[in-house]
Length: 181
Image 1 (cartoon, rainbow, N blue to C red):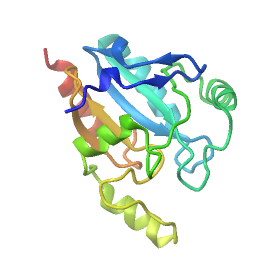
Image 2: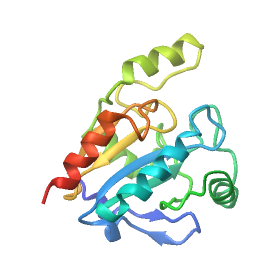
Image 3: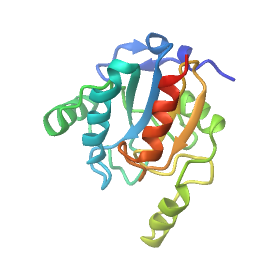
Image 4: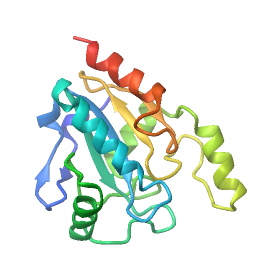
């Protein structure tokens, strides 16, 4: 398996980085968007981050414009929106692609490690009902899909976009990973 900690990334301020500084922590990676029906999830994500960051949880936001162009702005626009609308304090990274030929290598690792998301079926059906084209099985389905990474860097679980940060299934999985030594 690829070491997620060495994959090149950019912070939202444009500075090159990796996930090296997050080694030993439980990570929740989320592809986010500012103009999506699921955008209010920022509030619960921030609440979860404030509650559990002292216990070793890091929430990592990866803006992506893959789904109906719902993240059209610049990185500066995204920072402004997130800070003024939701007071986001968890780390945000520069906009990336999470599906398709230009999918970021980090998301390639995530989707290969966990090809199936908890509760993806109902979300897929809802999108199809509205005539929205959906990604192939195994690919990120929509904005706000969540990947849970254990302290050792393994992708341990994946949650569909409509599984919110306060969903008992997600919270239990995070607590299970935080309890591991």
